[in-house]
Each structure stands twice: as structure tokens, then as C-alpha cells.
Length: 144
Image (cartoon, rainbow, N blue to C red; front, side, top):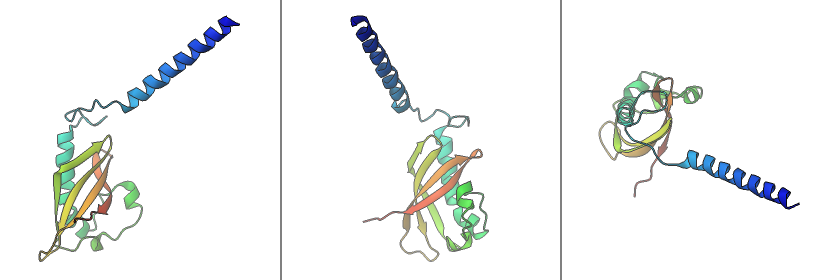
């Protein structure tokens, strides 16, 4: 009977070690900002620059009803882009707020309507889809 208990105990320890090792593998933080996005051969700096350019170009793309900056799921919603940002709106991304987790990223931006006024602050969520960053959604930020 003691041999059976020993085997059960060893099996339990082995399962715990494997589970713990697997969990560690998925949650370890060894991300190098200069490492390429998996499968894309790009660095985080390149992605940050491309995302900022994408955000900055949104008013012109929306005025032309060009959906190429949007993710497939957002394009499927059939949005009227010409109403999303008034013509002449200036959108300025804040590259210091870039955050990436694999193929998902976000960056804050400010949109100033034609004629000036207070800039509206928002966060842009992006996905890496078909070899490029695409807008997946935007969220208004409350600025005190």
C-alpha cells in the first residue's frame, strides 16, 4: 500500500510541476521592445510609428469613406465614416502612450475640430491584421 501512495504522491508532484511550469511560460515578462512582432519581422518602434501615422491619417481616410484603416470586424459594422470626424479635424497621437500586447495595441490621441476649441481626448485600440495595424475601436477619455 505504501508503494501506491508513493506513486500517487510523485504523480501529483509531477502534475503540479508541469502545471506551474506551463503557467510560468505564459505569464513570464521577457518582452524586448526591439523584438519583432511574432511572424511580422517588425520592431515595436516601427509598429509605434506606423500606428501614429495611421491615427494621424484618420480624418482624411474617413472623409473619403476609406475603410482600409479599420479592422475587419469594425468594417463589418457598416459605419458611416464621413460622419465620424468632421472635415478638417486634426488628430494628434501621443506616441508616449503606446502599449502593445502581441497583436493588440493602444495609443491615446487628441482630436481638434476645425476652428480650434478644446481637443477631445480618446484612446485608440488596434489589432495587427493582414500585415498592418488596423483600428478596432476608440474610447473617449475623461480629462479632469
